[in-house]
Image (cartoon, rainbow, N blue to C red; front, top):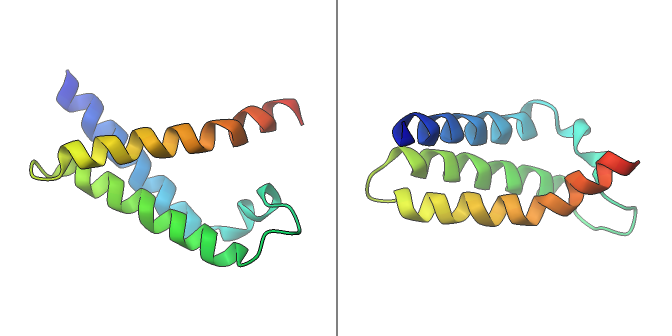
Amino acid sequence: MAKIFRILLALIFIAGGLGHFASPDVYRPFFPDWVPMVDLIIYGSGVVEILVGVMLFTSQYRKWGALGALILLILFTPLHVRDLFL
């Protein structure tokens, strides 16, 4: 069962990362006007999400991928909570 959840999580991260490249305009409203280099942040975070997803598939980097997923989920939680109230 854990393997199924790991694969599902990996696919979600990879799909989410690809979404940063397919539809970058979706992410722009999340940034205030004073944030510089928004496009770099959007594409960079997409790359990180894809890397985390791929790492979850490899036995050698699985623990690092899990740690990366945890860190990303913690970092993005305030953003998603804010969206609930706007």
